[in-house]
Structures are given as C-alpha cells and as structure tokens.
Image 1: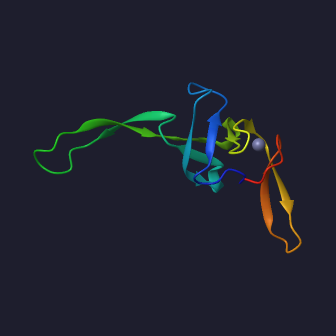
Image 2: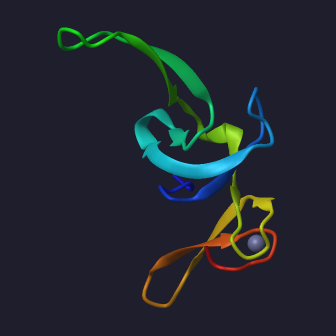
Length: 102
Ligand SMILES: [Zn+2]
C-alpha cells in the first residue's frame, strides 16, 4: 500500500472530508487505515470489574485508503504517490506534485 503508518493524510470524502491527521495503523488486506482523531465511532464498553461503570468511548474507526490522500511534507498539499527505483533497486515514494521523496 502507498500509505504507511505515521503518514500525514487528508480525508477526501465523507463526514470528515477535508480534515487531516496521522495514520495510526494500516490494514493492507482490508485496504484500510486508522487515523488519529478522525472517523470517530462510538463504542460501548461493558464494566469489566465490579464497581466499574460501562461507558461510551469514542474510538477512531478504519476507513478505506481510497478515501484518503497523502499530504506531502515538502509542499504540504494532498497528493498522489509515485515511486522511483535507484540503482541498487531500492524503491522510494515520491510526491506527484513536487517530485520530492517522501
Ligand atoms: Zn510535494
């Protein structure tokens, strides 16, 4: 997947459209990512020990990678991602807008 953990991404569709945040986790098999503080869903937590109360917590839910764009660290715009391969065969992600390595 082109999006990696720790990347700064922007959501381009849905309720959180236009907001950006850091990728907390990527799920390549599901083609989805979880982003810090975005796409929050309510989760009911049962009391685990006696005396503890059940509560409603808000946790970031995963969303499809097609709904996010990487924000380039150099030109700080949402961009598509390309790859370059150097002489020794190492792949490097590059920004399609400014050409800087990511
Ligand atoms: Zn760029």
